[in-house]
Image (tube, rainbow, N blue to C red; front, side, top):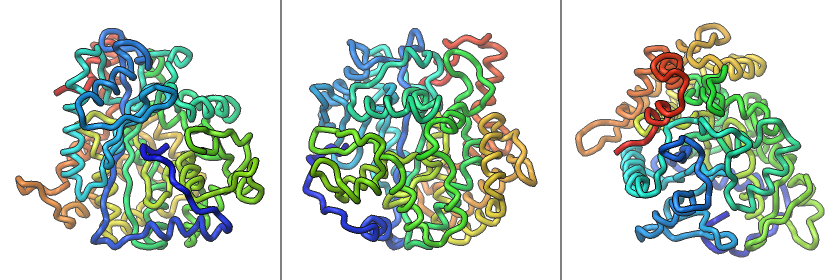
Amino acid sequence: MSLSDSTESPEITSIDQLEATFHDGASQPSDWKIGVEYEKPVVDKKTGEAVPYEGPGGIGALLAALKDNGKWEGLYEDDHLIALGDGRASITLEPGGQFELSGEICDSLHAAKEELDRHVAEILAVSDQLGIAYLGLGITPKTAIAAVPWMPKQRYRIMRDIMRKTGTLGHRMMQQTTTVQANFDYSDERDARDKFRIAMGMSPILVAMTANSPVVDGELTRFKSYRAHVWTDTDADRCGVLPFAFDTNAVFRAYTEYALDVPMYFLARGSRLLELGGRTFRDFMASGLDGEHATLEDWTTHLTTLFPEARMKTYIEVRAADSQSPELMLGTPALMKGLFYESDCLDAAWDIIGAWTLDQRLELLAQTSRHGLAADGPHHPVRDYAKELVEIAHEGLRRQAKTNPAGEDETIYLEPLAALVEAGMCPADKIIEAWNGPWHGKIAPLVAYASYTA
């Protein structure tokens, strides 16, 4: 839901109007930007338990403390402060209290780094008084799912009930998982197709590189990215790898047709969210609901409720990575920017992953969620594919030649991820080694290790 008041939105009369929203997102390469969304678990610093909304050390108090700094405008639902915005960026809550900064549209990764640094400093400035910690992990590690709090948002109450029927892990997805998402522009439909199929096709490799969620409910799991595993049994209608990404040139029409047949969660009218009873957008567009008719704003909202491994809006959203420590957080955006914003780097990436079958992609996603970079790929070890993609991205960032005042280009944000890949390690490997060693299977050392610091 927007931080601004809802405005009158044009009524939809044809599928062509829906498809046109994707065409309208195209821009010239000289105008391409990047946007990053940063999620992290918030836990009690002493116990490691997920933080509820209520109370002097709760998520509501955290939002209020940030709002009191004067930068942010508050958004309320039923008198609950549930988000902050400043017209360029926003801070929102995931269902279990995971904290998200949806960053500004940035000209470079240097600008994104400055924004991330400001955000980390801002939230750390109020953490001691609240007794909370922010974790650089892809999942909330200790609190059992039945005890994870729910944030007071209408949207999440509706989703919670629906996800009881669509899979066994939907509540875990909502309440425990965290990611870092990167958003990229495209020049036309062909460019969007190329980026979309690489974002979708690379998802197993991204999982392998960024796996950072091996501990759940206080126990070590069989997965290096339990977050990635959770998505496999959340909701088959709206999640996973989309086969058409690899076999169509008309990707805007294909995505439109796909989205039309996904059941809607709700219809937003003012401050009210109306449940649709499983009706698809196609059905709603054809017959309406109690005098309400489909609008472009309804379509835009519906697109935000689809959760495939890569998502299309008026930009391409890369969604497959676990959230990271601040030091590694820009690794995925750097990797994808290096590949996406140089045409021959984009082609080179497809040369590496383009020949895999759909079954191979699905199997590889299952394997990398368990084994990270130690998984075997269709023809080579996953580590080898990852190294090649990192090398291509490094060259792409070098060519883009975006420098900071110190004269450094954007490859500096790729280097920490590249070092892990070179060593054949993902972040989860370090956690697992310590968990089985000096941490003796205890949560407190994990919380100390993963906590954001100044």
